[in-house]
Image (cartoon, rainbow, N blue to C red; front, side, top):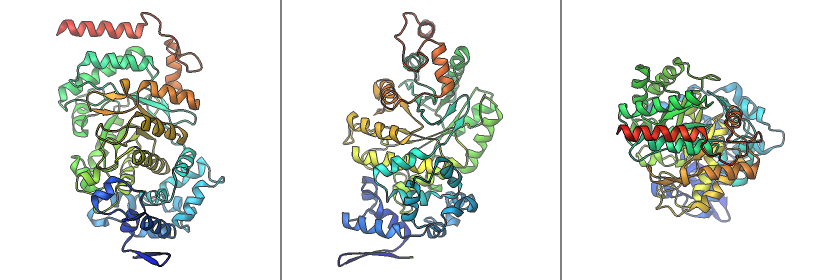
Length: 468
């Protein structure tokens, strides 16, 4: 189906919904690299005007990637909830935008609507929104998940404590964990990106994390971000694993490039739930995504990178994850060139994920060769806090020495909490108060000399050094 739009004496014609969505996207490096972006600002506006008149039903009826060729398309269409879709099924994309921004549309309305919205609908409406629209609409969405604590409650923002080490040194990892906990971080997850995927090293890290959480009765969850096949093998050997991690994409070919299938993710979800390690809930999956992953794998099928990203959220949604986050600037300036493009992508991803019913976090980050700096990230972080982001990253000094990129620090989380009055997961915040790390209002207390958490970690580090 072709779409057209007149601007002055010029008629713009878009040969398909796929082309229309791509040309309506705000400018970004990845779509320019793929040769699918609007050629001019005027063509971009024309595409937005034409997209606003497209019925949501038409989007449902026109798969961007054929049903028979792609298991993500099949997942989207087979799981579509027609009853949930019914209240908005008569709307165009433009009318849907007005509906989302209406005072009458509440968190309960959006929660009921989520199963009826496809990723392509979410992506389409986001392309008509200004940044402030994305913030306001996402802020309305409430998505709560549980494992050993409660994440996503209104007025809260969690932090993933990310204690990566370039050689997977356990003493170094433990020192960062203690540092992060003393800054009140770690309620989303204590999650380590391993330097290698060697099962023995992964097992050692998982056992260390399990020991720390049990010893101090910390109401949080642990994860070593290994490949899902490694996690499956370790769980089969009764290695203590809380969450199963996997990077995912929005097409079957992208997921194949990650070495995964949907069946594999289903098996991992079942295996982790069978361990019954959660004390408050059964959300056991942790997914990471990022705009540009499909294009970088040559697996985008001509679909724009933001729509491909939204399709990844359909994969995540199928497995009821505890956590999802878009690692927004990590893939590099070939896909998001500068701070402005990173800001826009972060707000789009967060909005689309929340609209689809996911507990969305964002790794507010950039690589060192991008046209961005920490001032840009301050703006991104502040905008996401206003939008109600579920969680962000906590990295010492905002500099990940293992992955080699810039993220957000323990101090950045303190800034957001103070500026917006945000609390931590309630169970975790109560633990911090019991440990004399914060007061009852969640504010950090002056560090006590010889605090037992720090002293214990220091002693363990000395023992490991002596043993080596």
